[in-house]
Length: 353
Image (cartoon, rainbow, N blue to C red):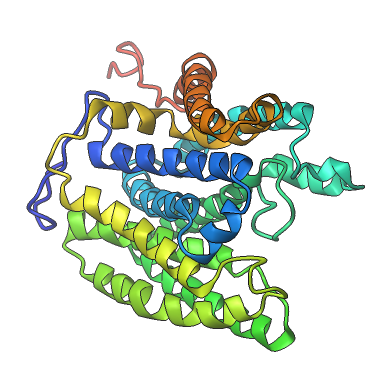
């Protein structure tokens, strides 16, 4: 991708037209999330330490949202809204529903069907449970709701002819994050402030894309906001929790977010360098890996009780199965989406004057 007015450093582009540095971030982020949950499954007390000091899973999630903002800015600048919607649907939903069914079969601990929760289950089918802070059958799938909300935000902006200006909506999400944090602290209850924070981070990623293509400097404000305002807002957010260690500690929350931003930044500022093929491969299967790793870890947890075996076995097992899901299910469905959204060119006879 060459940039006349943006950054002078051109990123490496893979054979399929994918930007290497984005797949590199995805690969590291996906493995980080899997490793977090594998350690939680086999190491007693790990979750408390992770939330208190550094959660590699949250590092991965933060990096994913930055990547998403960059990618959606790039994608919607080239695609029509109908094409974008059709391709995203076939890219995301069928695989998600398949893994959702698998999670119900293996009876994940987070499965809301363990309680009288059919409405929760139905909302899980839409991926929107994360927006309203309801339980996710797939624990990590709470991020998909904010992702869909960001798709809607950018699609509406494109429809209005304001796609580039939609990046500024991230500041409104940041303000909402701060308001929810303060209200939560005032009433002594944690409110769903994570959703607007993730949408702010996606807008941050979009601002980086505009830096590359338009020479925009809006990313500077996002960087300063992430470095200063987000940590300040996290203080009342953490204080609103009923128990200090029921969720993130001040250090764990902010350090995990900062490292997630740093992960994206490292790959971004070295985007002119080729990424290791193994990371590109992991980036390619990252969606399937992100979705399916929790039910697979649950299956292994019941069979393997020895942590030194369970953790590496879980990572390898999840990666192998995710690769199979990607190749046999995800890729064919992506092709279906592209086929259904392909622009039909008029035949030679139809264009004869």
